Length: 204
Length: 252
Image (cartoon, rainbow over all chains, first blue to last red; front, side, top):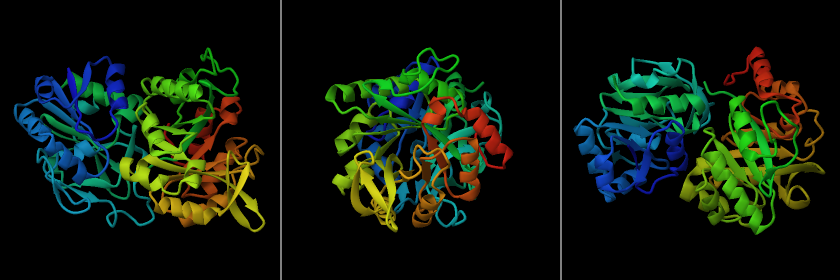
């Protein structure tokens, strides 16, 4: 079973539906025991980093995600949930992340050409950076749907795929059992569903 | 680089899609789920569902259908029609909408956009403006284009974006239904005024009009249309192929 961590941030309807679509049992839960017992964990999120990380800490679910990741359980963050996996974010101040991946979250403003609109909203193509089971069912150049204004910088060897938007925007990241997608796989048609399916099937 | 988006708009009344012809492989084109599935499989980048029901029962049917669509279709869904309060945002977002478009509701209640943006984020709030030329200026119209609000449109749209609207749908009443192309002049004025995505609506009569749109206005983000898709005059795969042949970046 997949646990989608519910800490009061964002709309989890489509995410839950997308797992049902690929025949996977997923439960939306804010219960520590349920999350600890799940086979895999999805950390979702939309909105501002500071607010989300505060809520995650207030519920104590940050420690569950960290300890389950340390136990080797597969964890995937989506959109802001991916950003939360990193060390820190500079979105309106400086906020600490979960520190499960190396790197920090920085604003696009000033780092991409001024004529490009922020947020980065829409369908953009993936360019592969390293081998991963997550991209087994898709091809380089496939499109996924992004909505964000901040991105991960200094990901080092966790970079799996990027998208070009005036900068190489980290799109899929992962190191061992900790993974993330900056885009919304649950809104990226069959390509997104393939990535979720690959996550469920696990590392070979 | 990000692609230009093609967006079919589905008007829903009492749970059924209004107007349309039969497509091969779609048993019932007035069934929102069947039609949404068809468009999604044929390359629509996003779908807009517009609730034109006035009754309470119709609203309930609409959210039931939205739930059904969102549990089967995995591309972005925007919902509009009858959005007057933050509770209305809540009602449709819970059913799986990703973005909510406001029109008359934002004219009646100037705080609606900022309240919704604060709660759900700018990316969730779309200002949809029905605009028509009156004398020398662009004017915002309400109630489905029937009522002149007296508001100057460019300033109004700029203010909505300042309040937190993350995207603009510009529907030109002057070109809507005429099928002789999008309102490039009006779009240009809006594109110069705001720095969020702008979606062109009103006036598409054929594939050439979309080519014209994206070639003339490289910063416009998307083209929206209803009847030409529903009546099969333009298919999205043909449209996207032609856009690609013209050097326009699309998702194929």
